[in-house]
Image (cartoon, rainbow, N blue to C red):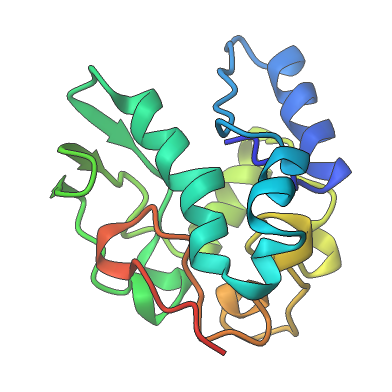
Length: 174
């Protein structure tokens, strides 16, 4: 999902992944550029109405991109925070009307770290700087060691999810 708000490091990582691995990435973009969204909804919608910004820049574009598919696969893990603790391996995603597969649901951060080390997987350079859950630049902060990895998202709001995962939609109030 290319929201138009990503860190430069995220875009570098995305581009390098496509060059380094035998895969082709598909960019999913919102219907409006950031400038067009600003013109329609006012600047910095993410600061005023983060749920609406996430809906416009992530949820709706992904809904359109998944049209015609029977399933989608995520990297959601139960240990990423309390809102994800009950993540099933496979479920029906009511919001998108298809099967949602979460193959890493039972993995821990230690499992991920070991896999990355063993396979030499490329990481976003922000990860070692404390960015344990990386989203849009204006809405993402580094977190202190031992804190909930998603606590760095939407600082100042009662929100830790963008709305892509049904059990965790909503919660964008100050």
